[in-house]
Image 1 (cartoon, rainbow, N blue to C red):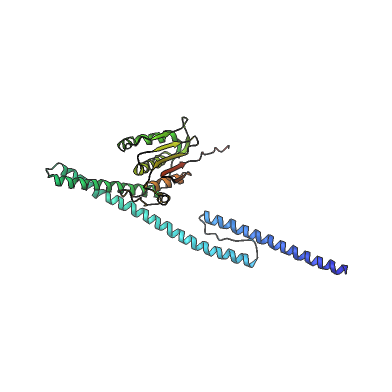
Image 2: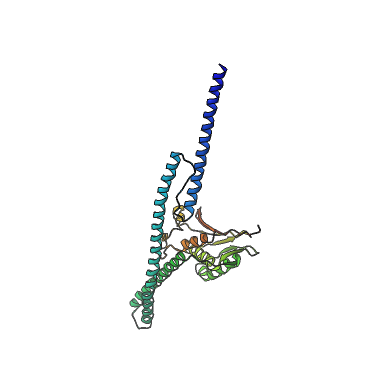
Length: 301
């Protein structure tokens, strides 16, 4: 009886060993597929996923994932090509619109010098106003297409406190015209980051401009010692849904039809391109836009 029992135990031990070995190799294959899949998604490569296991099911899984990766790469190329064509089209259209708009503005200026009735003067004033709006929108489209198509940034040592101060001062006349007395809290010490100065100026300028468009008479700008900037203002005409789409390209709030909806989209594009983060929060009628750039660590850290 004992030899039979020992034989059974031996067979069961072999079976258990084989099962554990099978599980180990399956887990290793799954890990290889997961790592390879992550690499293929983050890198531009046509290399297929290959695994060391000879297991038929795992190799079929790898083959099926390779098929989907090929389709994904194809769709990604189509998207990038289409996005590039869109940017080029926007650049060309906005550029082509500049010449006739400049000519129209010139002729309107000449008409201003001529004698005309009060009614004609009123009509000309409306035409001039609409022309200026169209020029502004065209310039915004052109700036977006340039920013979106350009990948080059020139980072340098930049004081975020001073940069923000200069941007706020540039909007002083607009704030005064709107009767806004901004609440500003900035650190006394400089906050340095390695960033592109032009891009940071564009980010701050676009956010402040957006805040003044929708502000209900107030504006608060606060920067903490870590360099995180919070722009907040009362905006009862917004909702959590509209705020969730503020960074979308060409999205405009119904209350402001004289905008392309590209200002905050440009701010988001530039912020993320420099490794920063930007978000919009709406709570109890208050819109908050937060921008932060992480402090770069030195190689010795």
